[in-house]
Amino acid sequence: MSDRRRTVLKLVAAACAIPAAFFTYYGIQLIYAAITFEGEGSLGHVGMYIAAILFPLLALFFGGMTMLAWRRSKMPSPSRPPA
Image (tube, rainbow, N blue to C red; front, side):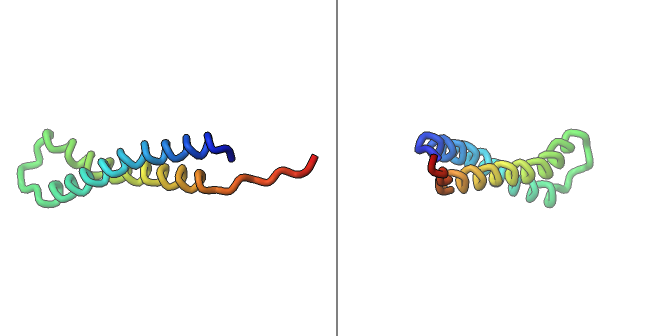
């Protein structure tokens, strides 16, 4: 694997880590808010419940992409057979 490809994969990993951290933080915050919410079940709060489910899923997705890109950037270059 070339150094250029390794650099690109590390940049992809860093770019995916940022939304993973964002969705993790706000996912935890929304789950807490959904558990402790004591208001009436109006339609205005449906979005909070949807986000409380969707944000952790997005955090897992971006976290997985971060791990995959970082691991691929650390893989050794395949040896080529002699010509």
